[in-house]
Length: 212
Length: 118
Image 1 (spheres, helix red, strand yellow):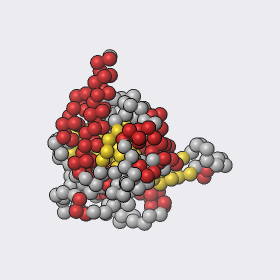
Image 2 (cartoon, each protein chain N blue to C red):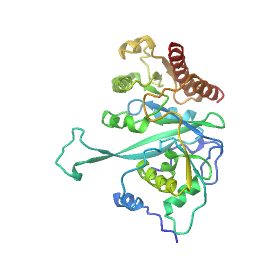
Image 3 (cartoon, chains in turn brown, purple):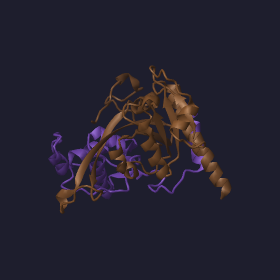
Image 4 (cartoon, rainbow over the protein chains, first blue to last red):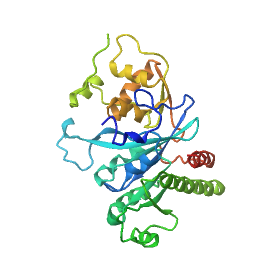
């Protein structure tokens, strides 16, 4: 951990230490989470839009009293190390958006509250060849009332080419959840995914503000 | 004198870095921006020195963790030390840690504007 995933060419201008610092006026950090199954392209999406090469960090989670073997005493706690990638987009002089690629495996989802509280919203990245991987993520987001959009990462060998309507049906996705195609490798496509999410969040906030 | 960085991956290392403490300052969010208010002083722990060095410009907690190759919790503990001595200030995110706080339209408009200008 510590440095990077790969692709040293992805970052822009950097300091001699390889870091690209924020402006001194930066004051507000924001979060968006990208979730989805293993290998669906979460880091690829983060990399395509990030101004820094995606970094990797980890958290040691202590899991106590959640159905693990409790034999009493401190030693009964289990610790799990969870690694996640993140990237960064400076929105303006003051605001900086962080994109987190969240581990998609079910056993890591107890981390959700703690690591990703206060997120603006989430992107569920879907691989049509493994749509089952998406169900758990969607279920947890709905449970936590975290607003999200679903982006279908169209791989080159995605020969089946399910239509978005078919995918919506397969995922039992309600009509109000935006569903879009994307190519996680392409910057404009990744940007479109983020704009779709924030536009969705804006519409939700607008509806809420006019209702109150 | 500054202590040598501890660079083994063993759990002992984390115990040493934090002086055995495991409870972190929860006020530090992943995207809290940390700014150094002074330079390192003599005898300061090497991790504290590195944090002050990295935070000459605002730096998010999660970026500090990546740069220091330390888990988030450990970084939060170290930041708590520096905050207590006034060596750093923290710019916390406007959106709180509770799920109940939703972003307002003005904030989201700014985000949209920033994204469209990418």
